[in-house]
Image (cartoon, rainbow, N blue to C red):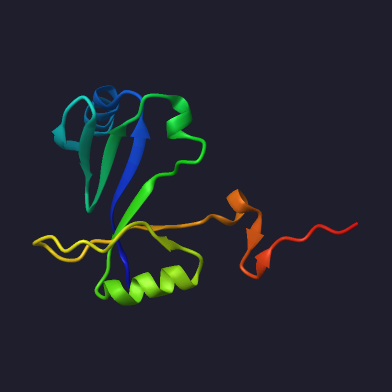
Length: 121
């Protein structure tokens, strides 16, 4: 079973957002600078990454969900089978294999699990 480890949110003001989580919700800020912060919220961390415009943080972009899995190769195969795409090579840092798989939400591309939606009439 996959375990959610962290979420990345794209923000215009990382320090202000980190402060919101720290002061407003009592979360621990693990690290922070002007362009990146990591906030601890129990077992799932929230990473905040700076972007230059609202367009970068919305249209065409989405949060990053990071999962820890026991079998990365099997997980990648299943995700690709179900419409994901590998976003770069699998990396092999000291703590284990890391891969980025990009999901293709159905509504963004006008598709369905059975293929493209066909409009008739």
